Length: 404
Image (cartoon, rainbow, N blue to C red; front, side, top):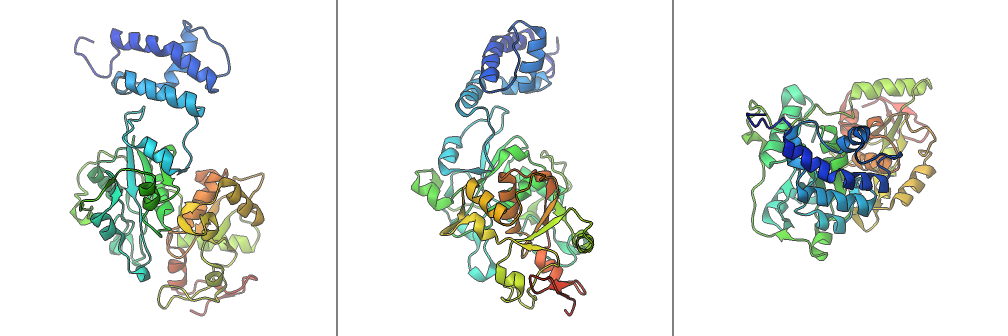
């Protein structure tokens, strides 16, 4: 291209791809990337094996196909069988990822997704600002980056999923791109990191590039991970200009169930015509109506036809920032009748306000369920129990009452 168009191939580009082609064949063969033999000079072999590792324009090729990026790709493919990282990643893995340049040109971004119950007296935003924090980490406030106001949230429910334009503007302000790998972590005692993990996935970030740290800031520091200790500022959504065309591409939240959808499903469940399962992540006492709700004037009990699956079972008993091994998760699901040969039936997870329900989604996906079949009732019990004439069950027999 005489104009040096960035989207056109040059002879140098083609020579570089030719230089790396035999190495890519070796990696693909070693890691199960293809299952038939090709000559390294074969045009068919080149197009069917090499090109899937690359993008379709020369501009993207130039971004990806540097010697350093290829060396990183080779090391990963040979070292881990070219398998993607799990949803749940260890502190050691994350320390290794710090400052890594991804083969797609993205970076690894650490996100503090801490949130605490109002009754705890802790303010996660202030703790982040005061430090310490993982070096370079961003703070994601699920209460601030959310749907607010009469038009988006007429009931004033807490931390509802944000509209796409707000989320995209926030990602731009954080300097996060669609190519970046996200690792969510939390401060001591936090149980809410799966909510931020779920938000990134539901808003359209590449699901293979969104993870939650198995452990928290304390574990990071003890393992020698680098930290920032100086004071830092945090994002305030009121400062964002939502009229700007965003660089980040977001979608309206997927995998979300509304109160009307849940109401319709429980009618179908009562007639045994629904394929849905509704799970409730709250404690057994709140589910049965024997313990009060932490939110004032909110009746306890559960959605008729729902099944209790306490979220804390999937977290380490001594540290909610750590998760039980996959084998333990499977055992819990099996005990509750949730390990099935057919895992295509959709599951809706609920809780108090849409936070701990995300722990169930995380565990279910880790154990083989497809994310596309996993939903969160965003308003959860706060929405259900505060809405007039919605049925409330108080026992395992699901004897519903509408006297509220």
